[in-house]
Amino acid sequence: MLRAQKVVGDLPTLIALPGRRFDALGTRLGQGGGWYDRFLEKAPVEWLRVGFCFTTQFSETPLPRQPWDEPVDVVCVVDKETNLLSCTQTRARLPAFDTINA
Image (cartoon, rainbow, N blue to C red):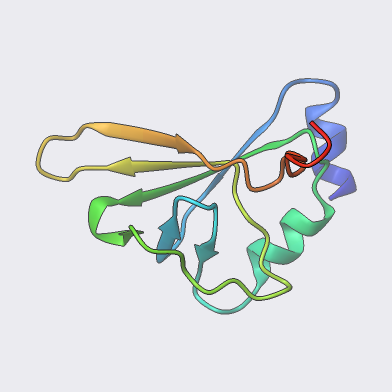
């Protein structure tokens, strides 16, 4: 991770992530090896995490998330037939809004 941070410096950074499945809450299911989760765990908080998938890989219902799973900030879904891209901000890493004390 240190090497990546040295290369990027102070530039705004986006991490493009593949996955087998994504949901609107930012849950990402990969191949099961945990490589991306270990990388994201060490990545600076400021780096934007964007998952990319096709329509058939996007789940309308929440996917199971394990304690070690690192969520994405945005999910971009590509429609193979139209080549249109739609992106959803997940808010998965934003602090929860406190409705009781607001």
